[in-house]
Image (cartoon, rainbow, N blue to C red; front, side, top):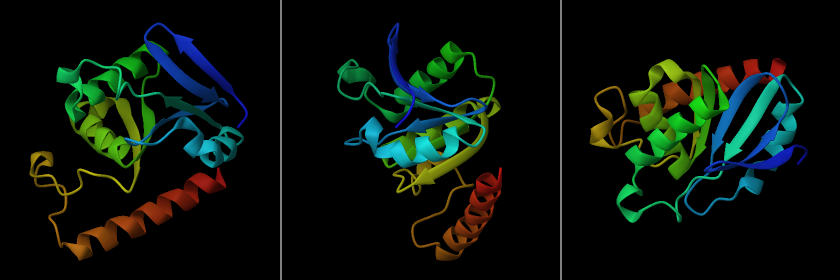
Length: 154
């Protein structure tokens, strides 16, 4: 994985490429290296890949919740000077990305989630699927496939 691991202030993160920022959010047990393929592919195609190390185990126990992590991501995006970003979240990172998109939509240019927790959370409002709504999932997956193809052509 080409790029640099950086430690600036309270943030530790990996960064590679230039262009539209894609902020990748790892899951509970995930590491930054889980995204080598994503970083290598997109950093060579007009995107800046930024993978912050989420403070899952270092943050105050009272602030280890999705809402606090979404704020951490917002603060990180502001720290980096990004206006709007594409968020890519896996597992818990997807849940954080969903919550972040709900709370700070002005900061989100796009959202990609994989294996995300939180999809069926009632706290996410009526615009998210309810457990067992397979037609909703199929429709969203088809739209996601179209978006991914467009990104790969860039």
